[in-house]
Length: 154
Image 1 (cartoon, rainbow, N blue to C red):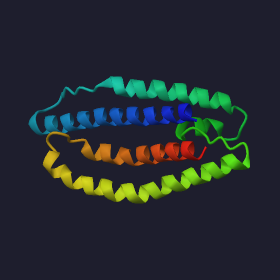
Image 2 (image 1 turned 30 degrees about the horizontal axis):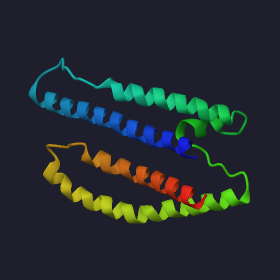
Image 3 (image 1 turned 45 degrees about the horizontal axis):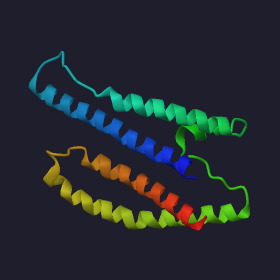
């Protein structure tokens, strides 16, 4: 169980790193446009973007190989977290409890993360991509809550 969801956590973290790289380039662009005429020189850290694409492709291939004949398997492999293993009624019940715990955690975490946004004006110069981190913490907390709840009930 953990191996399947660890890949989702890693991919979410890599995606956040890639988005921070794009955000950094956007900040450079905004500063350059104000100060100079074209041609502009921008730098982009391509490492997180390449890692996200490579790791995402590898994970998608492994997920698709497990379910090649099911309808919509390629879409699930590319865009959704690892599929649930619900072979019997007990596992369906465990999945339902874990999903409920994950849903409830969002009602607790969302206001806390919204409150953390009050700090943003004070750290905007040090961490300009802070809202992006806060936004990506929502699915990360939901996924970790699901994993912990699933393991506790299993």
